[in-house]
Length: 375
Ligand code: HEC
Image (cartoon, rainbow, N blue to C red):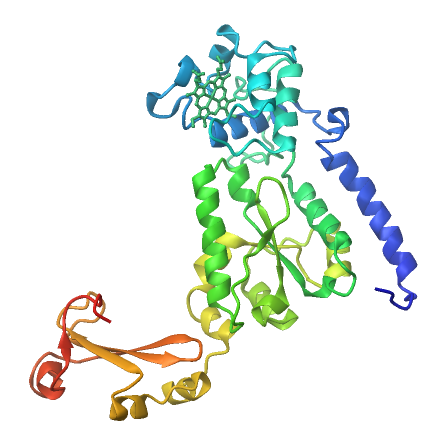
């Protein structure tokens, strides 16, 4: 599509070029392994260990299960068994990974991770747990020296987001926002854990949306740690995102993130998805993001549900009572009303089980049960 050239464009291009320069150094793992800025052999080794932990350990070492007697987290044993020959690009391990024979059953390692393993072996398969090094004394005892994992350091995360924004259509950029679970990946989360965080993010964000369609956040990196959303897919606005940011405690405003702010208008480059899931699933954020009103009457009007009419007409509603709900102390009535957004569930909790609080006396014909399988 052709757009009138805006006077801001030259600046944008200059920033974009600067950004490409930066991320080439940091990131282009697949293209040319020499361009990887892995200067720290400990970093190279930790990255390899992280990959083994997530993708191989389940079959090669966890709970003593060691297929072919390979213990991937035992570096010395990998070498003594000749699965890894330091400095040799023809090591069996590289062959298995680059041919996609391993991880068995797939999915294959992303190119970036294959390069990282090759790099580790070519660098002489350095130790990932070297004995304490006295030359690296900690200036702040009690506070761990921060460790940058190549590929997903903070700088790299920002570079990835920047590149993604730059690839997007200029008119879409102000609607794009990002979630990250890179900190969990860097901390050694398993593939399974990463997947459950990904699913939780997709589920919650769609639950916080009045949009009729379900849209999954889109992963933008090969390891599936960074996700792009388009605010419009959830009927959200920049203000919705800012409401989240206002409550977000990890707001480090990195200098390198200025280009992201310039491109999309977002004050911070990303929000941690696990924080979002833990906090936006509860009030006050839950209510704010959905724009829920103060009273039940207003809510039912908003949802287009007339509960009195449904009950009077005995249509579009199912109703049941439970003696022990597991949620409220006493007996409880639940109703499921048909609504344009799926179902509207209404719960009535009672002060006691007796007299005019005994739902089975006051509501003749109430279905009873401790489960809702019938509804
Ligand atoms: C789902 C289980 C599983 C996963 C995950 C897995 N492996 Fe394996 N691996 C096996 C099994 C089973 C064998 C034995 C295959 C055989 O006998 O041919 C094997 C064999 C190997 C061998 C020896 C091959 C040979 O011919 O001697 C290497 C090296 C290896 N795996 C490396 C890896 C690496 C590296 C990863 C992670 C990137 C990995 N595996 C992930 C199950 C797995």
